[in-house]
Image (cartoon, rainbow, N blue to C red):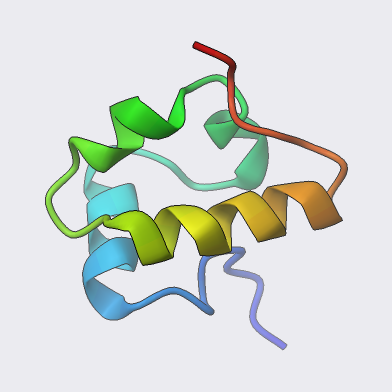
Length: 64
């Protein structure tokens, strides 16, 4: 199993998160879905997958 929490995402989504400096799920709980959708490479499917990953870890996106 990979140590990368984003390994299940598409390659463009992984690159977008890495380029924006996101390395773990806790960082994503500080941003809204809308903020992430502005990143090139992240779309509705990636957001849905991230939402599921966050929920599994007991986290969620920032409300807003």
